[in-house]
Image 1 (cartoon, protein in one colour):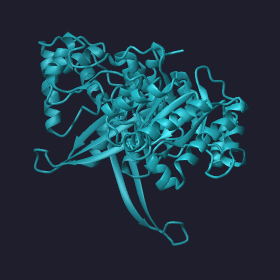
Image 2 (cartoon, helix red, strand yellow):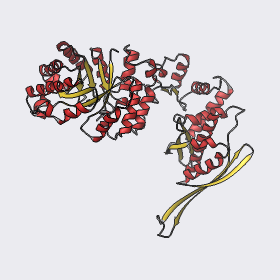
Image 3 (cartoon, helix red, strand yellow):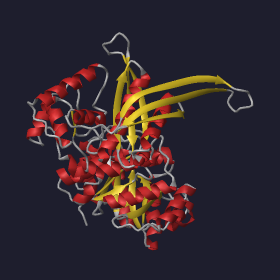
Image 4 (tube, helix red, strand yellow):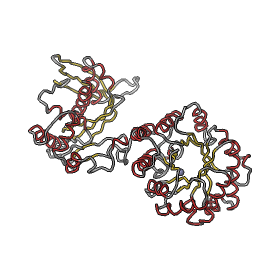
Length: 527
Ligand SMILES: [Zn+2]
């Protein structure tokens, strides 16, 4: 067994984040993914609290887990009733999970002010509830709610709760920073105090309200905690929970704690993005370790340093966590970025060569006209390819026309007034010129449809490509007499995503440029 066990609560605490709602299928899929990632405990939800959670536990029995064990979450018995008479505890016992995490109060003020019962009754609630589940063969972890606040207001009582839970047979005492207000030094001191009163393993469950959830978790591990609770991407109520995507690499790479295998760690970035996608949230590019920009380098000096020594401007090798280094190409950067990017594309472009200089000049000129390549690496890659003398375009535009019309129709037709968009496109592929027309939902869509119609005859596999995002920005800073429009398009073939850019005083032309780049880029990759 590893020295530190990973406990994921994305499916329970993580789902408390505003805007997240996992279906049962989502939860089952995430469970499989977490298992692959090497998580030791997966908290699936609160049986008895909602039909969704009940269904999850029923279906989760059929999942074959290799690394992880499933955990059900619930509360200690209500006050002044018997544990056996508590419906919640019965649901927990019947959920079929071999482990139950019970949340119990460990702060005197929470007991008297919120629970409105006596300190003695709360101790009895903790020990009775554990005593009810244990004989059923269930392993019990205690989530000591508000432990760090409780340790401040009444340390004797907070520690007494741990002692009582330990004597009742809990197998882990998880100290919770429920309000997320603790500081790392406070966590260290409180964990050390807890270890003095009990031999039961200590866990940590930190919230991120002070942006210290990861720091507090690592401080707890330093002080001897052996179970860390958190969520993927730090999802959670308010400002979130401790982010396992930062904790796992910190434990493994920086603290030498072998909590996952090298292969599992190399899947971290993919798992983080997968969970974001399932949550229907755009993956945060600026997350440490797993964000798309976590290893992006813009300044020319950094790029030239990195090309000499990969450790010069980054704290770890991004590949270790499954991420990638990214050199941003922008007017701020120099030849080093361009040479580096060309090399990644398999094109040798010596830094002092005429081609490298010309390409840099071209990028600068285009950027002054409103193009921006930082976020449109596919368009930049095409610039590099086009710089080669022998480059052959997969297709070439001859001309296009777009008509947008507002028509009045008889009221019997479902929408009396309708916008019509139609595009006519002429493209050359090899020696042949294709002439197509298509209607669309808006002018850009019509253009997209007409262009595809023309190209599908030559490249049937192009049907896999679809637009996933289309962004327009008006550029105040453009130097021309009229303001320019920048269009950014994100495309996907179901496996990979790429971004292209177009800029012009005319929104249709800007859209066309980005659109044509997107298809050209994909066709180029298929060669
Ligand atoms: Zn929590």
